[in-house]
Image (cartoon, rainbow, N blue to C red; front, side, top):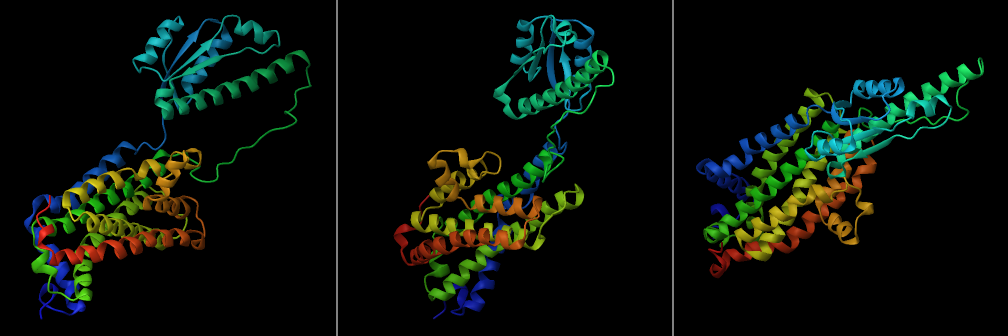
Length: 396
């Protein structure tokens, strides 16, 4: 008896499932758009926004209550720092706070009265820096830059004062700490964020596209003529051929995204490129497993799409790549472990930025494939069985 795609042979069912999905995509503008120009536009927007790489000219306000030569020199040095720009020099704190409230400055540097005299007496003068924690990333960068400028200027003043008071006694400090950046030494937000945001966008669109492809057959009732008469192995092959279209397309996008950063922007993969692409493939297979699980359990296109949006959309925030998941609540840690993207983010950092041995990242591949095994084992039999259950067809 004819099975899936008109044959009972799994070898023939796979290519027919592939051709079936290609035919549909050619006839549906928006479904084709979802996997063609929409990912390109979204990745381009992210790339353009992060192309500067390092934060420059962050606006700050300096309130100089002292007015002396040391205060003026410190203000000049702050403005000359590449990461800072003294956008305002208000005369009092009330005006400086207004600058922060209207987002004209991220931080305020207060130079109190008598700062110059205190330093000339050989005592320690205290500066106060106020920063807007509502914009923690930008304010944190400005705060670090201010600290570096003040530290360097303070060291120079200390040496000059010592030389003036006790000539010939200037010597380096007895203990000095040297900080060495191991990875991403440029501190580039482009490398850190774009490398993570591109796969975050791609896996979200991938899951939505696959949920739509599988759920559409249920919604339109076409799953019956497609799979009802097929033997189990032929039906599995037909479904595999259908979703393989999306796996191939999104692997292509992954190669393009990696080529953009590594080739065009000059951020080379320090580890194994093959392991990185294996991680991409395993991530897509993991989200395929989750999609099969959700679609098989709900047997509803609308519910599957809703879960896909929530589940994949939350991946970036809980992956631990930007915010340390170790400091989060137990719920956040468990939720992070239940997201395939968390394992992929670790693999990406290990292979792209850290140059870790391949053996270090193999465990992440196994974690990702576990999502596929569990999801397919539970969801795929229910999805295939729905081909013989007309009562579940037509659900929105």
